[in-house]
Image 1 (spheres, one colour):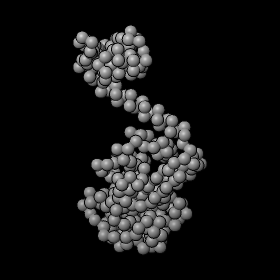
Image 2 (cartoon, helix red, strand yellow):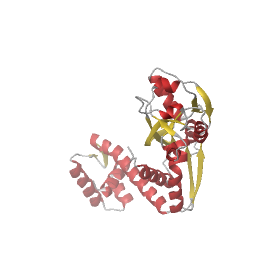
Image 3 (cartoon, helix red, strand yellow):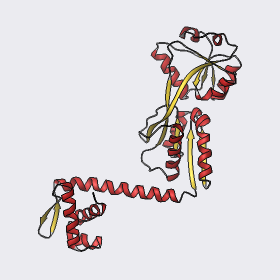
Image 4 (tube, one colour):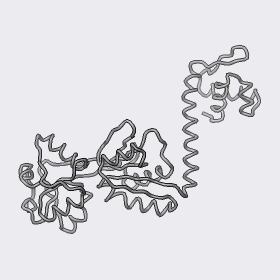
Length: 298
């Protein structure tokens, strides 16, 4: 479909006149007629009915009016976004993230973004998933990266990457010496948990509930790092992101407890407001994040 012909069609439809559309489009009236005829031939439908000096839309023309207006709007949005991208020299990008993506995935991406766009001021906030979602709803954050799907009337939620989960213990813990352990063995131990509102904790406890079981926390701590230190000190067993314990497992400060029939992972998500077009900075950062984690947009 020729975009010039579509612009001319929209002008005729809006003004209900070939003559007035020609004036607005800075064309001759025969040129307008040729463009409309070319569009009708391309689509295989009649778009206008002549009534004296005025024209009115056919049923097919009304469909094209609605869809054509949307297409032209999208084209303008693309042009605006590309223009902003070419001028991405300053501005502000407000990123929020829950503990796992915020501590272990995003810093490297933020560093790459800062190196490429040093004029953009970065604001970075770490909190639990619920608090980050609230920040996006309040429009305090452009993008929020969280550990669970949080649906609100104001936000769009998309998968970002996969996050395997595991159980961890101190290398000296009795469960660390076993090749595999049962769920009963695990539940007999002290549970070191994240705070209420943590996506990691909610994912694990929902899995337990599906097994018809529950586990009362022995300790509740406000960060992954606090949980890891408590477990390394021998205070109990924790369920956490596999990404979050890579270094400690390699260094033998923590070990992964192999639980029978436990295969648990979650998706990490990105949130943004539905009613606002992402800024060029937010769009570029999200594209960089997806490329770094290998998760294409759905």
